[in-house]
Image (tube, rainbow, N blue to C red):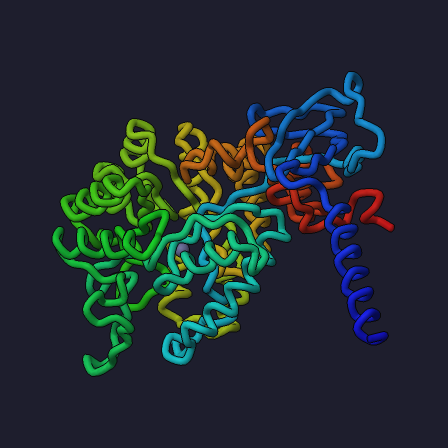
Length: 448
Ligand SMILES: [Zn+2]
């Protein structure tokens, strides 16, 4: 009897305890509000800074931005003090490869790495990218369908990482930039023989099929390879690899499915073919000529020019086993791409930030800002390429790219003034994604 009474009493206490613990949680349906004191704010709706503002965040969205002088923060509220820092929108990199490692240039890894090793690497890269201040990225080429799964796992909260706009593998002609070339015909690497890895397609019918198959497995964006590449074998970066008719079919299929389409293109003719076909962004655009620049302006096509990674490819990548053929191609293309960038900026072509992360180590994305300014942009232009313009290219202006009411509370902060020295963005001290702090090394709280 006695023992039974004790048990009942224990049960009652347990229930009472649970009720008390439950009562301490915020009421359901009442999202928490956070107040950020920003010493300076670059909201990316203009090229200038605002001083001393309060950013009000409710749940995962920005609710209000007000001058600090005329705003009273309620007593006891959660306040993040960035009054000695510059706050900006979370950065966006429109050209990354989350699965790619920058220490894997030896071709043997094409045969040794499993889908699992790619996925483990991608999890690490996603965190590094987010902590570097990139709260949104576009993955434009990874094994089927790693970027889709990574996007979903991040959205579920299983692993930390940026918001991901996911593509499948880049779609390539047989023998092109996305194929495995110059091996014995007996060498087979297809995981999905009937789909040729969801990447190889020749002719309009096969292209339509592969775009539809990629959409079936959940991609947000289509990537097509319109010319040869620098890091592939047996092809020339300058040579077109699809006809205008084939590129038009790809663009039409992608747009019919409500997806944007990005084309890898180094050579002048391939760039023009892609623009005429209605592709949304030209990736690399290394050898773009004056006619290509004129066409890009006329069609409103974005250029995504990765003008930092040349330094890495001609340095570390050689140490990591980059074959001679690819070193020679990079020497041919790298400097000319920077000159092309300068001409395109002068002409006023739409530009979005993209770095080809994975070719160089993930997390170093911001090193590209220095080169964008060196080759003709103002710091504000370079930052807007990675915020408001990038959001426009990826079709997410309702959610990201500026600091405005209604947008996700994706914010970063730096100690130095990025409009004075854009390299300040290489040291992002504070990162918030969707109202949750993911890195804090500069607030008063963080410094202690
Ligand atoms: Zn790439």
